[in-house]
Length: 118
Image 1: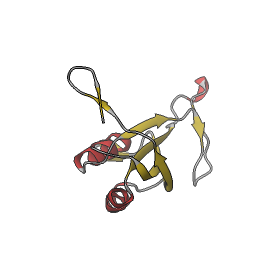
Image 2: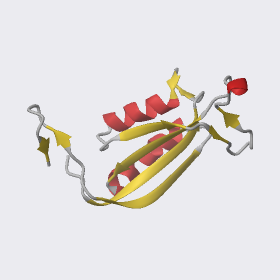
Image 3: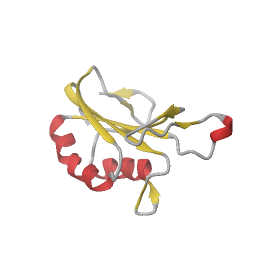
Image 4: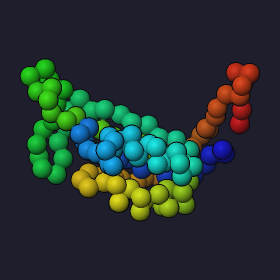
């Protein structure tokens, strides 16, 4: 896949305990993004945060039962991201999705011999 130049980053803020069809929502989003042929997705776990309900979720030892904040980041061309947004709208019951323009400098993978391909 060639991805250079102007792109779009979407950031999806959800909770660790959020689910979609029996699986963690973050995992379901990554799986769906892959099925739709998006360039890639990364899931990050926050150590502390709060959302629309203003309830603080933290990784502090005494509060390990709280669901930590999660962020899923996806970068691709605007057209592909725009086509994916209705799927996210269906999957996310509570959370925040942001979108911002990005400049992709390079996007590479290694071939079977270990050499980088473009």
